[in-house]
Length: 343
Image 1 (cartoon, helix red, strand yellow):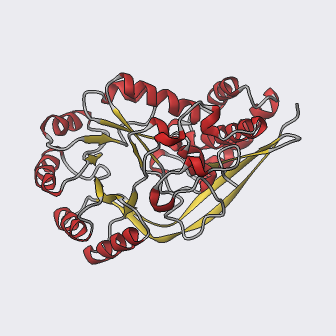
Image 2 (cartoon, rainbow, N blue to C red; image 1 turned 135 degrees about the vertical axis):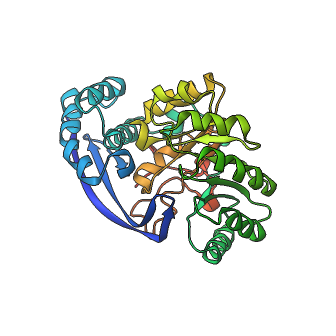
């Protein structure tokens, strides 16, 4: 079997400037991979994050070596073999490996003429709704963005914190979204003692959980917060790879995985099962990504407790369609084409 491979870079504008505790984005650069045989084309995407040492430049630099592995193996169904050899070839750059992994899974499912969730044997009725993220801005703008999200049908919201007015922000958003399911994410911005103080007050606003309250480099600080918090704690930056799952098991309630952190769909499934084995709930998040990668992530929804897969929803214009997500509801049953649904 002969496989043809290619990739392209693209800069995509965000609908609104997107600010978290670490900085502001107005655009995102993604890399799209295509793997084709004589019958079908598989599509995958990389949404690299500089926070984890990856950029579109680094992705583009290693993709020729990764795609050479695919072409050398020649059989897209040899997913385990290809992903093992990709790890041996490029030890880091998980977003680059993820793009290839997604494209391979898309191609295999298309060859079998089934959607990806069916290839995995998952129940499409067991999905969860994705949250829609409200980035940091002045309080009135955040209130207006919340109203817009509600008008678009979003019932689950994630609010970025890490400011000197975090309580004011949450109070303002709760005032216009009294019935929304609400998560907050500090993106490592608080000290442990500050986190406990803030969470004790945030608990009055009926929040589902608090994500990454302290820096990942302070695991004992995360434990300190977890042991004293009246709200569940989710670990994101503290949970990057499979090896991190047992390390966070006594420091949080929820493991937040991301395809761009872990390096592929098969590795993501391993992390989900490992988190379950350690008694953790599971969330799947994303970077600023197009549906070339978000669509694949949606097929993992039946395995999740929480989803934060709004990367494509935050774009001004996504060049790819994906799994229907009206109002954040991941509707795998409505997907009428094989593969991931990206096109």
